[in-house]
Image (tube, rainbow, N blue to C red; front, side, top):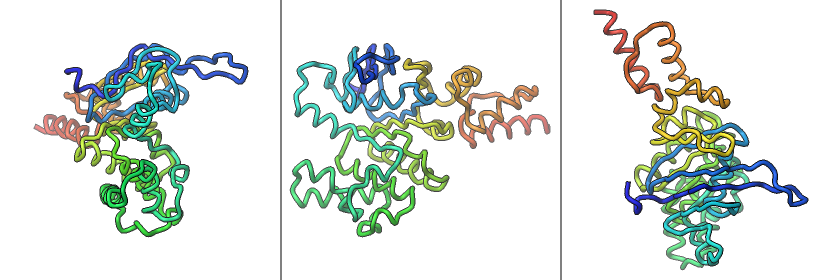
Length: 293
């Protein structure tokens, strides 16, 4: 990995929330260090209060680190002399999609909502129109451009919220529990959009989630526990550490749990593909074929 490939570089990053009297509470992040490359699709796991969302909010300076170093897109955002222009560029290039889409929808018509962010950048009308149309097309919502957002389904609302971020043309998008309030159909819509943005447009994606099956679709998984980076690897590498995950209050995908239990019964399932249903099915089928011979 060469340095120019790295989009996010955190070194000994710390952050503590403060009480009303200014006294520090328990740190939310402790000596947190990680590197994320441009174009990576990374899932971030951890129990409630582990520091996942805190890390995300540091990446576009919604929160300011207590100490340590953080570089995003080649700009050290922990410098004391960071200019207003650099902060604006950072927030433009690191978009965030939150849990409740209703909290991000600000207009009464879909296309106006998508235009809200880029319009505040002072774009010319033709460029604004191009960005809105392109963003709606990317998330498959062009036909709803004239609709009222409150009449859409949860998954459709979330795709409109994503379009609003895309219209800002960020280099990185953070999804902070963005599927938590959706039904399985809406969750699938959003996950397909996430994968498309990463695969087709090369956007760096961080998906903070409690759903293990979602994490299994990423290229890389980070596990945060009590403000520290506990694990870092591919989905197969992380979910092979089932007992360690359970010790910090996390589970593994259902298909992975099935493989672990079958192995516990003495069934020889050889291979590392344990994080997706298709890979697990191949392991089981291969074992069955060997037993049948």
